[in-house]
Length: 483
Image (tube, rainbow, N blue to C red):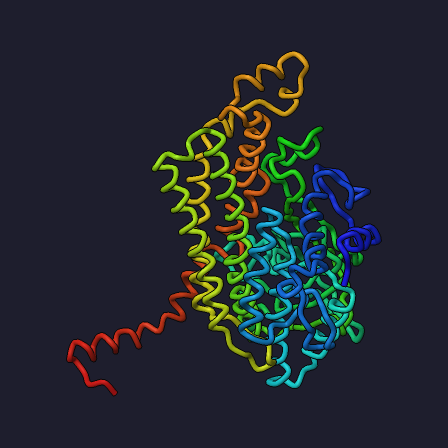
């Protein structure tokens, strides 16, 4: 398995075509805006090498029998699913940000079970190809960008009906060697920090959309792949001297628009090629796994935010106020409810035909539906406890200034005995988690990541088995016998 340093060095070997602020980035690994997100991924490698976290972070591969990083594993039991959630909570606590390997992890498990059933039904060899790719990922301990979300264009139109057919990624040609694809994947978490990209369709498809039914994997620096780095609130603070105003001094996350400009994919790396009937299955399973993930990662970040709010209350001298105590209790209650959902859908998981375990899809969607709401309330309560200084205080440069620094030090003092800088740092952390760069991976991603709130409601309605519920009511009301 890779070390954290080995991971960073491996990224230096890639020749990614990355643009930010209208310019191509020459040194991606050391760019001050990108590096914090790279540090978050590196933490997944660091903890895997720490004996204290070995049980959560590592596992024996079902493919090779070797010890591997859990982020490259195919779930073999409900216990594996539970440990995944616990692992993600741990990493959220350690980074207070998005650590970016979850999407690829969830893609592995969805693609494996779907391709197995495709091969069983159609006589194809997709699962064999996929497992060959995954063995390579496990052996090299690679970070993989799971790429599902297309730009989508006009949401009222199917992919084949769009004015621009490239608004959903599609196959534009194929021959005996492979296929050529064109399009883009939007909001790609950790794309610039990944060694490989694993592409999946984004919606269920009909026969007229068969050219959009495509899944494949490629090195992230393959010819024709272009990355356009996404902006985040307060992102340029990372370019400033000092560490305070960034809020989170070390870690972060990122997203990118990933463009595929007539990219060639050899057949051995193609896992779906026009089999449109299986697109919906792949999307549904991936979404379920990723909605489960949020019951871990968002909870870990929530732990940090709750801790920061409690610390701010102490620094402000308000920790003993009954209403502050009550708000902190409510934050814990909401956070643990999310965790309960993540654990529940994992415990109720079951084996698919390939042997890979799938979570309980109903409970996974309930988990994510709660995630679209509770982090917003946790953030609101944290902002309430922190106070208005969180968004009005001067900069670190003002605190360090030889002339005016003493005024910042004097007048932003909270409880005697607590350095003003400590108070400012904890408030900046809360600002980062609720309004700054980390808010992308906590608040906004809680809403839109793994599908919008309506996407979960559609799945909940589909799996609610309302007829069975109505029958139970009719029996108990004496309308019909219990048969």
